[in-house]
Length: 221
Image 1: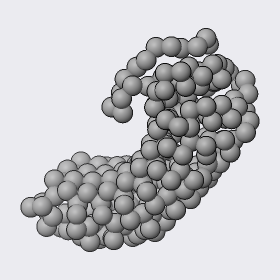
Image 2 (image 1 turned 45 degrees about the horizontal axis):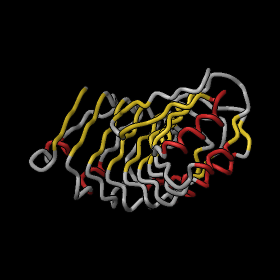
Image 3 (image 1 turned 90 degrees about the horizontal axis):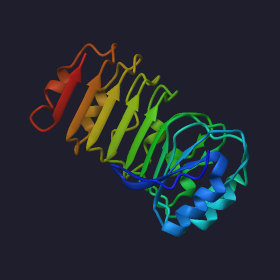
Image 4 (image 1 turned 90 degrees about the vertical axis):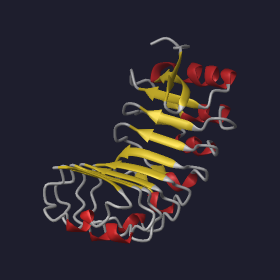
């Protein structure tokens, strides 16, 4: 596809859509505009050179990978984006990415894949959404001391162990069919919003009832 110069807007503000077959031109246009958000969409198997990211490292703050982006050259150049605050991966990718190498990252939303590494060392994270998380507990997240918002969907977790000491204000759990032990919730002293949706192994909500005076609770069975 040819270069798309249309500026669109979402909840994060104005953004530019960059198609993989015009990646260089798209990044150059983003640089010209000094726009801080881009969405990347695969339309062909043409090589995508991440070295182009170096042209927008001074101002790019948000990237959304809408589709799987393959055939990448100079992958490590993505770490030149030291101002990144939000990363979205709407599908799992084929490349490895170390989240801890983005020192200002505040939010990560992603389908989980093995190449998504060092989430536990991304200490600046304030919000995290994970889809299809493979672990049975959340101990990997226990060091994220700034995490205020956690959404876990369609994952294999059996217990919430690991989040007890986090400053969570918003916790959403949906379609986690193996989740049974939710005792950690009672340790979340700053919790304000709780959603539990279609987690079929949870049968005892006595603990949740005791929170309703201080927490906005939504249960969808």
